[in-house]
Image (cartoon, rainbow, N blue to C red):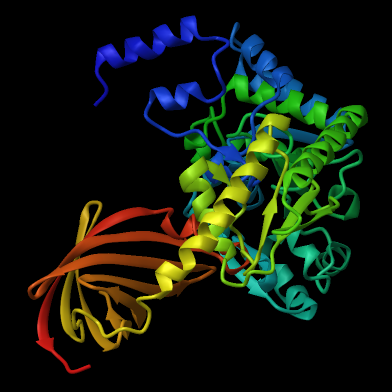
Length: 514
C-alpha cells in the first residue's frame, strides 16, 4: 500500500517538474521507462497522444455533458469525417467488438439487452473464417455468442440463415485472400459483417465499409495517437446506436466497458488528425529520417540494414537489421537491449539473425542514435560471451533429475497438485507433465542444481506456456513458474510471461536411471 507521503511526493513533483525529462514519472514509481521501437503494442503502452489530443482531453475535462447528447454529436461528427452513417467511441477495440456483437444479437430491445449473455431464442451464432480466428475473439462469447468457424464460402452460405453476424479480421487479408470481404458479402446477403481492423487505418471513405462491411472497428490508441484505452466503431447507424445503448453509461451488459468524456473527445480529434493528409505526410517523412539516422550509425562490418516501406497492414516503414554471425540469435539481442538499455525491439517471430525497428514511437534523433549505439554494444558483448557459455556444453550433469515428481503449483488464489515424469540425458530433460486439466510433453535442461522446464498446451487460438525455473535441494525443487501464452501469428517472448508468476514446489516420489 502506498503511503500518504508517497502520494504527496508525486503530487509535488508534478507541480515542480513540468519540463523534466521524458518518463520521469515512471521512475518516481520505481518503474523503468523504455524507448519503444516495437510499434504500437498495448503491452508497451500503445502510442503517446499528440499535443492536439491532450489539449482536446484537457478541454473536455473542464466541463460536463450528458453522455447520450455527447454520443449524438460525436456520431454525426464521425459520420462526416469518414463518410459512414454513424460512429461511437468505445473503451478500446475489444469493447467495440463486444458491443457490436451485443447489438447484432439484441439490438436495443430492453428485455433482450438486459438478459445478455443469456440469449434464449435469439440468433446468437457468429460466423468467422477459420483463418481469421484470433486470441480475443472469445470476447464475443462473453456477450452470449456462439462462435462458428467456417473453412469455405459454401459452408458460410449454408450457415448464414441461422447467424446474427459475420466477424472478419481485417489484417488476415494480408496472408489469406481466399475469403474476400466482397465474396462474403455476396454470400450472406444483408447479414451484418463486422470487420475488426484494430491496428489498421481508417480512411475517407472507409476502406471496409465501402467494400461491404456493416461495421468497422479501429483502435484509437495505436496509429491514431488517441487515448490508449479508446476504440472506434463506425458504420451502420442502426447497429452503432444499438452498440452505444448496450454500453456505458447505460444499465446494460456493457456497463463495465466505461469510456469517459475526455477519451471520447480525444479519440475524435485523433481520428480527424489522422485523416488530414498533410499531417500524415509529415509523420512519414519523420519516420524515414529517424530510420536513416539509425542506419548511418551502424557499423557496416557488423550489420546489413534495409528500410522496408509501409503497407496497408504495416502503417510505418520498418528497418530490418541482419548479421552474418550465426552464433548471435535475434531473441538474445532483443532481450539484452531491454535488460541493459531499456530499449524494446519487436519480439514477434524473431528471425535467427534479423531484428526489426519500428520508428513510430521513437521521439527524436537522439533516441535513434542511442538505439544504434546500444545495438552495436549488445552485439559485440554477445559475440565475446558466446565462447564462455559454450565451454560447459555437453558435460556430465552435476545432478540427476530423472524420476517421478509431485508438483504443487500455487497460482494467485488457487493451488493445484500436478505430476511430472522426467528423463535426463546429460543436461537435456524430456518427459510428461500432468496437470488437473491436461497432459502434455515437457522439455528443458539443467545447470548444476538448477532446472529449467517448458510446458506448452494449446487452448483454442492460444499456445499457453509454463516456464518452470527451480533449484534442487535434496529430494525437492523450489522455484517459480512464468505464465503466458501467444497465438501462432504473434509469437512473442513477452507474451509468454504475460499472465504473471506462480510458486512451484516439487517432491521426488521415485528416482529413475538416466
